[in-house]
Length: 469
Ligand SMILES: Nc1ncnc2c1ncn2[C@@H]1O[C@H](COP(=O)(O)OP(=O)(O)OP(=O)(O)O)[C@@H](O)[C@H]1O
Image 1 (spheres, rainbow, N blue to C red):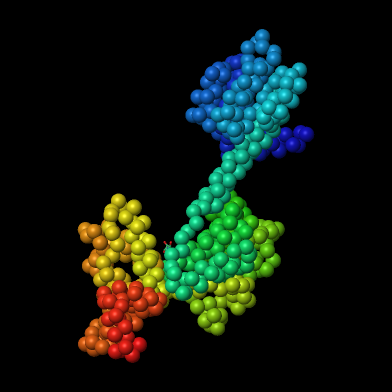
Image 2: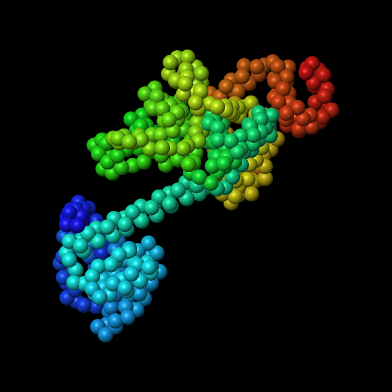
């Protein structure tokens, strides 16, 4: 027992004087003595003889532990006032850690107090070592409760964004993507999403999670393209206190935090070979070892990876492990670039226009035919993200009630412009290319293609005949 108490006292000293203590007792001598005794071991102490001050201290001082006398008035032996105070404290802070102080003979009441929610009790007069031991445990409990609360908030924030992201697009390519997402609901398979920057890989990953059996669990993302290489390992696997110079306290890695849920590794092509080996081992053995730790921790994550790199090429060049590729690409989903999605460009443009109209309190009604044609002609190297920014800029700056071509600015180096200029002198080539584009954009729908070209269906048929299309 002695050893335990000394250990507790040492614990208190090692706690860098953590813990704010509120002591409530109507006996000023008790308050004075406790203050003197505990001061070296804790961060701050407040004392009061007045139960009526409880609300003030609970809301302004936010104590980690409350030491509460059970019998306030000397004639009150029922302890009822102590119970009322406990109730008030719990009402103000349901996580509060309260230690009751009782007379030796009050053990029955102390048991009742524990049942009512007090954390522990100490008898008066107290034994110093025992009091310190009890307080040490109470402070630890309070800190753990706060940490649990913080983690719960984190988890609910991570789960939080429950709005189903909308995947706009009816082009054959996007319909196929939607179909695959639908087919994959209810599976736990690892998925690799491939596509250029800004094509919607992140959006698709969130949809896959949303329709998966893990939809209610954590969704943790690591963008391997944006974190420094030297942090990959600690971010993925976590570390123990002291694992490296700055590791002042232990931190779980994202694989550990994602356990039970989904881990989205964006830009997986950026993972260095050494890390690829570690990731492969973690996936195969379903466990990770924090940096500086001795024993492994079991994990259970569903992996969704994404990249704009050609992983097969990287495998051939010896830059990406083939065995890891096979582990992560149980199913491969290709998101086509926007320039290959025809009329999706206009659907997305209208979708973003509506959103930005609401955001910027504008009432722009659609795009002119020429504006649509301009969007259709552009090559969208930045894909949907670029289209989104283009629409945002246009909505902010436009003074028209319909978006016009001059509301959209594209870089002078755009390939589509270059092609336009090269062929500009050959009228038939220009016509053929434009008609072909309109047909692609409308998915073969003649009325829509004619509308895009600004001609009647009849004229379009005649042009098709003339051009031999
Ligand atoms: N089909 C779509 N429907 C609606 N919004 C989309 C669609 N595709 C992409 N977006 C939007 O475009 C933006 C870019 O998409 P996202 O971040 O998913 O692309 P990404 O492929 O993950 O990009 P990166 O390769 O740069 O990480 C996001 O705001 C996303 O919501």
